[in-house]
Amino acid sequence: MTVPARTETKREVIVELLEMSGVKQLAIQILDQLSPQLIDIIRKSNPSIPANFLTMAEEEMRAVFVENIDDIFEPAIIIYPQEFRLEELQELRAFRASPLGQKATAVTPRIMQQMSIAGAVWVRRWRLSLWNG
Image (cartoon, rainbow, N blue to C red; front, side, top):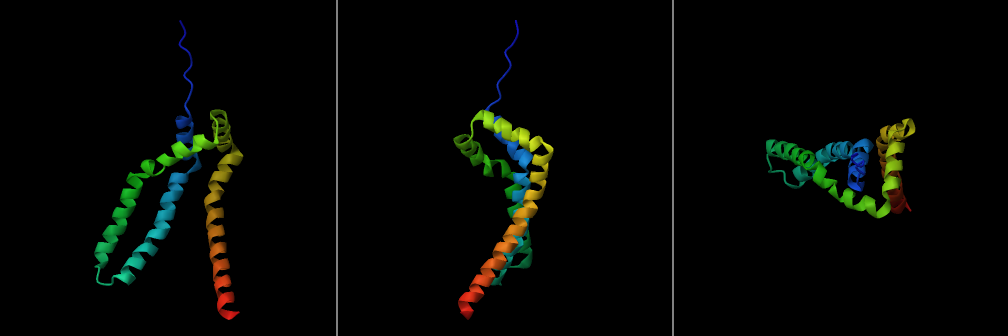
């Protein structure tokens, strides 16, 4: 008697897609970029807080974020199925595994960083035009 092949679930494909996309690593990189700014804001608004406390707080914030990264991305497990059928998720996974998909995954963080910088420059110019004009 042959055992029927097990059909993979949407959840399994979504978890794999999240891993392939590098989104969790990107979130950690964003945290690493933003946390010094956050700590600086706290330092400036509360100068009496000891520097070593802020350093420990920053380290703890990162540790808690990394430790809970799967829980942080759990909503994606609910959101993706609302937009994609299982077959579409499988096609998306196949794309992510392809050379072009891997390239897209690799360059997307750099593109997003450059877009963020370009957006900040635009906002600065816009604010200057309000003040000067």
